[in-house]
Image (cartoon, rainbow, N blue to C red; front, side, top):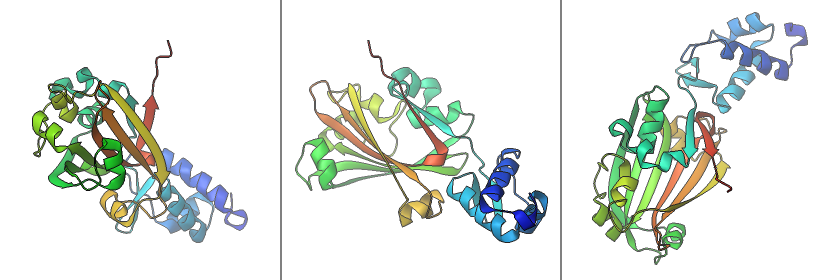
Length: 249
């Protein structure tokens, strides 16, 4: 491709090839240097960089474009909900185990509180809107890169019985703690939507406005049919692969 015949689609394809050949975390050359390397123009390279950023292949650090520094994380259902997986090597829940399984270091912050349940959450929990519930707000990282935000809502009596009203939910996370009580989860429903991130999510997750995120709503219920957990996960699409397996026998 020569700059006189350069097109945006061709420039994006050429830049994808350049990025694919780099190690994670590598800083790309200047747009001028890239244009010379792939036979395009600086204007087209700038647009191509923006496209690859919206796809999550590149991130911005200062004035530099950086190859996405972390691997895509595989989230497997039902594997992640088994005690063996959640508690492996002392993991504090499925996220901890997932990130470690990919050779990265997990980290998260948790802010517990007691708050009125939003209307949609209250409907799922089968309670009156505005009823106070235990809320656990988390920001989650892999190798210090933000990869997810999640808000968990638990009926206050269930949270108290399971001992998950504080910051630390212990080995296996809240599902393991509930497993020792009448709040044991025996079924899970997950609903997934895709949208652009809110302004808060852009700041927290370091995303451009035209990126895409999964909004995954997890609903956990007991064998008696009581909903004991609603968690809303917001996850950059480019950082997560979602895998579901069903036994059809």
